[in-house]
Image (tube, rainbow, N blue to C red; front, side, top):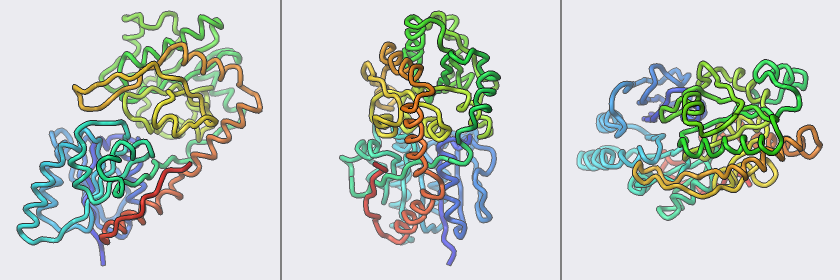
Length: 402
């Protein structure tokens, strides 16, 4: 018997966390028919013989109205919602109304799985998590966020990382990439700055850590930005030069934007870098962190929530944040604020450890850890979870890797 899935996701517009996790899930549902509703993507993002694509590109459909209409019209064995919590909260009203209408018509009940793939602590999500038959987060910390809602129905399934695409290259190739990307002497620390849905203040607080290191050690570091126009409409080049927030910073911008670039190109950028400096407004999982770890590159991030869970004390370089900034106005919860001197301390440690056995052991531990996030490992977990929920069973709660 062929099963049917109704899939809805926001921001399926690039080969990033949302699209990646959807591909992994769908890879285990080859025998299902899929109705895929998505925002901001022009084409099918899944390689599937039995998928129908309903694009809402250019439409204001964050409430999932099209998906709710399909849910009312057709019978499905499972409904999967992949959404930010702040967007997902808007789902609850339409979905609850659709469920009531189906119940009145005595139609088949469709189990609902709600995956929130960015695990920042967002506000106003309780109603939707309660409405779902199973909620999924990618970290234990994310599970704690919804823990007060209903811990028994919240699963932890990490995002997968392609450890075949993101991998360490040989020393000679890394040296060549370092020269071609950064054009610096071997003794200079090369830093890749990755800002994901961040805020200007925290990004430049972190970058001031690079300036602080240069004040201590001289011109020993060069930074390369992952994208020319990071989220929230930021033009980093304009801001760095006109606002004067980082004085004397030796930097360059990736142009065109690397968001959605081929994986081999991004892997080369990781391999050209001694460290990835990760700043995030709310997306604590940080897919670039796992990619960098798989590529054998050190990660520097705040000692906070999901960053600490991923890097631990022996898989990366954690700096103490100066504190939290609440952004209640946008219903997206707190953002961590970097301490420039703390960032400088960790970058200086990377500089001093380069080439030592201790540094290589840290990189090896990091790569071994994210090896547990390979698609071949996580795809079967997704298959079991979805089949269990479709059969009306609540899976036993599984924790993330220790």
